[in-house]
Image (cartoon, rainbow, N blue to C red; front, side, top):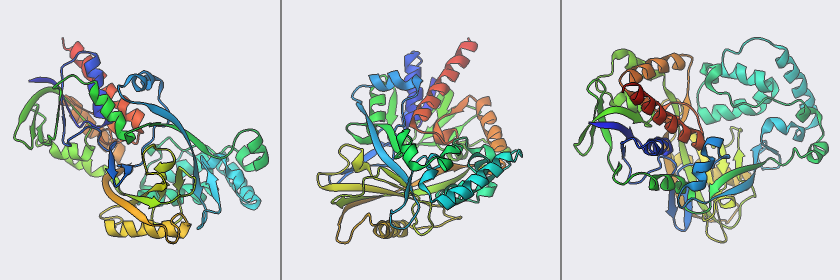
Length: 439
């Protein structure tokens, strides 16, 4: 019997493995793909390099600065790039992000209306009962309707009123000075241009991060190309597609939580019912390699319904090796769901090309040299008003059988890459603590 088994070696599973290795706790890790990384992977196509999905590192939390600095073969550079919200059909009005801090880019009459609405919403002391009410309380009804509502309806393809208020805490408040202060003064005081600063590997794409993490793992501690097919929680056993059976003391999973539940052969009915409240939206990630240049943005959010994609990234402006000289890379994200918003991969690709042409990003005669398509099933993690209680049922059951989860999809919680790594480390520390308490 193995002390600890980790299934899924994305960045959170790797974080768990590294923490266990640091404590000299024996473990065995299993990954169904031929290499580590999960969705933090990169692929080469015709001289271009595309990440599986647009990934950047928005800083390094204090707990990870040392790790990022010491990972073998990883060289992170500080990048800066312009990010904005597209407010018209020809990129003639792009509001820098964060949107709430740059409302002085809007016409004066719009700003006056938004100011009165923001003040009215702040006087409303009612506790929000849904995501729209929470967002409105944070940024004002006008700002919510102008950007967030339209953007999230297209990004999530889900009835926003069915999402609870506690689903996210990432919405920034609208500072009133962004409605009052003229742009010239905002520029003078340094609140300008929406430049984002972030970290990105100098070579190898985002996959350079998990590859560097995997290099620190003990020899023979992980197995690739090994997919789990079943788990028996009571007997603490896992089965794999190659016929192998593994017995464990504790199990750590970074698989999507609905898949974890479906793998457990002896899961009780109440856990299976609770898993029905784990809601998600899928994403087509469509990448084009283009001849010539594209506008000097790094990222654009696109709330308007006239275009099918909700976000565009331009990795050739920040990712070394993303495109050959004289070429550019652009990536579009298009949400879909097989029941709520069915969309074929072919139609998603057409929507991206049509939208890029409409916005003037893809110019007449400019050739698409390379294209890739990736369908991320669990793209966006969503809650309805029952999900929080249902997750308690699932997680309590798993913990009672020595099973822990980690990462964005394992813990069913939206989190960036650094937080996912920390989530895996926290799971490792919990297993170490449990083993210490038991003897």
